[in-house]
Image (cartoon, rainbow, N blue to C red; front, side, top):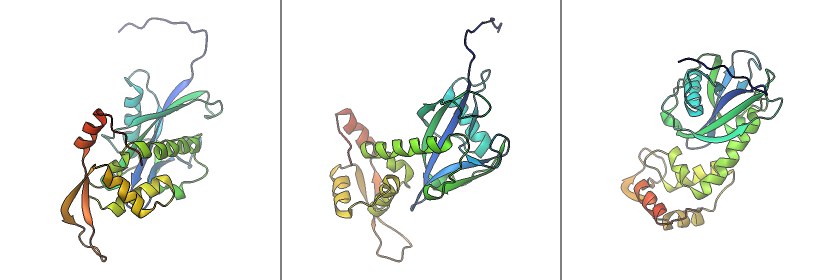
Amino acid sequence: IRRMPYTYEYPRPSVTVDCILFGFDGGELKILLIQRGGEPFKGQWALPGGFLDIDSDPSLEYAAKRELEEETGLSDVFMEQLYTFGDTGRDPRGRTVSAAYYALLKLSDYQKVKAGTDADNVRWFALSEVPQDLAFDHEKIVQTAIARLKGKVRYQPIGFELLPEKFTLSELQHLYEAVLGHSLDKRNFRKKILKMNLLVALDEKQAGVAHRAAQLFKFDKARYESLIASGFNFEL
């Protein structure tokens, strides 16, 4: 392909992508971070991400998935665009605009992470334990993602993406409490959830628990999609 010469009146900023991955382990909401192996911010924790390859990345989403796999070993992760960050001074190397993507994962399916390329380490952090001195403006990006998650979990059943296929009502409530950051009234929560008719009660109970085994449920995604098509409003 022959490249045509162009002359731009304004200098172009660098373009990067950042990935915010949330996981739930049944108790706390966690986020995946890498420890930077190079400058700037060598040794500090940061979100997985990197520069857009203008010649080989066909889209920003492709770049985000490529960087995620290169730095953490994770692949086949569905991510949704969060926001674009481009304040001056966010990157000491020069003016940089970053497109941030986020995802919700069942932590049990994504425990095996491995540091790669320019990352010295990679690990899941509970939100309460995230380092305060994240590289670049990544603390701002994380807080933006948490705010989006808190808002979205109230009007879309995205919480089910963080749970095993079969779960108890207590596990579901603990998840929502972890995301929202506060406790919920048990009776009201169960009443609202069951009234939506989005759960399938299974003829199964928990196994291997010391306390009284609770009934297991499944999320009826097909019914939810059918209800949405007819104007159903999910609101917790």
